[in-house]
Each structure stands twice: as structure tokens, then as C-alpha cells.
Length: 203
Image 1 (cartoon, rainbow, N blue to C red):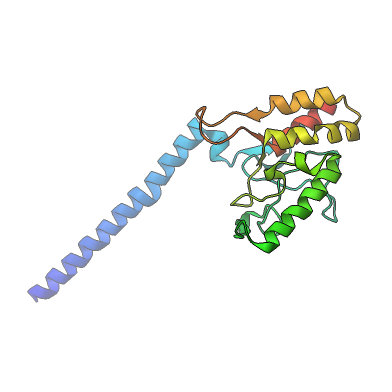
Image 2: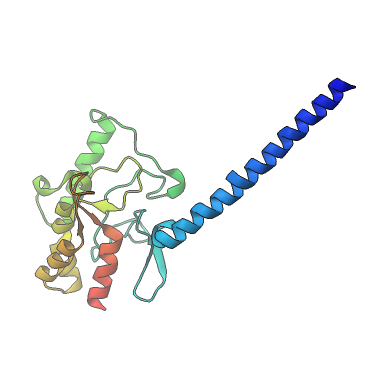
């Protein structure tokens, strides 16, 4: 009988501990962290949502997206992102790189093909095409390109939109994000935010 009471007491203690920790760590902690996020960093806490001039949600500043027609061909009036290996491109549910090494024959062939396409699309030589224009990021979701790739596209975008090239170049330069903390990583340009600014420039 004593053994039974001890077992019951032990199980009841375990159940109470589970309930208490569930409330504290599963409910209270979540609410506190969510509240702090909404107060201190509301934009980041809500997915860094990007909106157009009319306030309509057009994506997230954290996830790249394609600027292409129904056939998948890049639209010349928009700045283009780097390639994506995530699903059909920038698929948040299929985030991944190609997992192909630098000596992989398929990757080398794809890079050469992309380099020729980018050069022709922008009216430049293949030697001017930067690496990020022809290679996907590790996640396949990176919304950023290098300032070099953004500036490479400025003449084409300006021509398609009937804008002075200097104005488009100035827009790109105003959107260059510096290295994190001044020394981590490389300067980048967020393509979605750049294109949103481009649309406002015309509007």
C-alpha cells in the first residue's frame, strides 16, 4: 500500500511539474518574447514585410523573388536577382543550394550558360559579369545582390523605362547596404527594395 501511495505521489508531482513548466516555458515565455519583439522590433518580428506605394504587401525583405514573365523570362524593366536553387526559385518551403561543388561539370556548364545570358541581357561582356549573377546562394532565398551586379543592370533598366542612367545609378547607390557592424560580409543591395524604390521613382 505504501509503495502504491509513493508511486501515486511521484506521478502527481511529475504531472504538476509538467503543467507548471508547460505554462511557464510554453505559454508565458512565448508571450513575453513575442511581446518584446512586437514592442522593440515590430517589423522584424512580423517577417520584415515589404509593401508597395499603395500599402499592398508584395513580399518580404528577407526572401528574394523572381521578376520574370509567365514563361520565366526576366523582365528587362526590373533589376534581376541572383539565381535560386530553392524549388522553382525562391521557394521558402524548399530552401537549399544546388549542393554542387566547384568542379561539378553541370555547375560549370550552368555558370557558363548563365554568364552568356546575363551578358547578352545587359549588353556587356562576359568578363564584366560578377559571380553572384551566375551562382545561387546557399539557402536559395537570398534577396541580395552585389552593388557591382546592381550597377551592371542600371543602363538596361534606365533604357527600358526611359529614365536617365545617372538617375538609376544614383538610386542603386542610395540602396547599397554597408557591411554588418562595419566589417562583416560584403556590401549588398536588396533587389526587392530596390525595385520598389524604382517603381516609386517613376510614380
